[in-house]
Length: 157
Image (cartoon, rainbow, N blue to C red; front, side):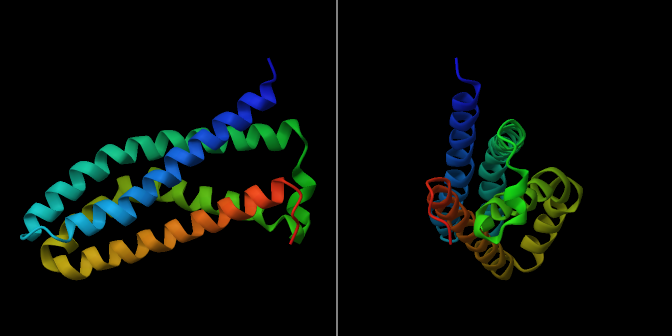
């Protein structure tokens, strides 16, 4: 069996589940949460759903990182990081690193506590900030995906 085909398939499946989940949270979950009447309901519902998704996001982010590292090593793609035409390689690493820091470091250490406090003190502003941040993260993810698919099929910018 071709280990590179498996690595690429796992990488893409991980990206689909990870960024697809971010798209769901951004375009479906957050707008629905904002329609709840009370701040307490919003916080409880959002934390329950986001908490479940966090484990999926952590697992898929880890899968994407490991499979991406394996492909870069096996295909010896390191020189691409020196060529600006392969900007999407940098973008993949940057988006992965940003999400990894958020999921594995910031969220467990302080973001979860910050959210609970801020949502109680300023529920509207907190949810609007979270919504804007999710749109930024989703946009960065989608730009990276578009660049990576185009670039990996020979379209250099």
